Image (cartoon, rainbow, N blue to C red; front, side, top):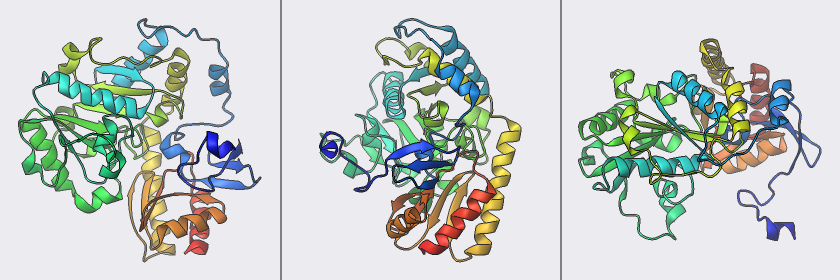
Length: 373
């Protein structure tokens, strides 16, 4: 009966969570302990289970107000995000998909509605709401009205003055890495600059430290000055508030005059309690933290090369794609071994471990992988 009320989408035998053990493990309803390499698709990257400060913030009595009103916590978080990322304009929403929709609408508004085309990258995923779903695989929106203005970029040469925006995931997943190299991404950026196309970076999963950078899109403009050529708009979410409903659209100064009530409104965007929680979580990000993530990623690669010299992989900080045969079968066997990963295609599995993931956890994963393959 429960399955009728709440159908299971991703797996027919989807796990039910009973409780948390720490930042990396959880206990399922089957009373088994699982090594969680999904972390909510990256949502729980900064989360600290049992942290007294987190508990204090979540138990505080914050006043819920209309989004027409401002409050101190929202202003402070906006200011801190601006300093952290270098983007002067910040707007809060409730989810990554909603923020992607708002970013695309901003691109349309910036161009006065005269440009209709939006460039997307093959293999990307940006959400499943009205506009965001148009930027993902065509199968996700096949039942919707014609989306002919959302165009897959096969070559940067197609980009011109009739494009309102180009949207790219901050950390390109494995399908994109097969199709686009650093030089191709660089030329997409150059074309956006040349034709004043609004370049949107979807950093919902990759932003805020996961890749060893505050924003992974810092690496896009290879050979260009990031301070001048950074994306026009960046969307962040998930780890911004450890899975609680908070996201943000970060924008450059040129969009200031486009921000009004006709652009977008988010009923509960920027709740004061969630803004305070986000401020606390983001306080752990800094130079030492990012250096630690980069070093950890390097050590993980060295150990993987030693244990499985024939496995190909891509890595960007703590975002990993491993290419294995019969990936879905491998992911099911890993679950039997007590490890959760995400099967992203027939030949790859993706890992989104927590920032608190250690080399001990990595060794445990490799042992389970050895059993699974």
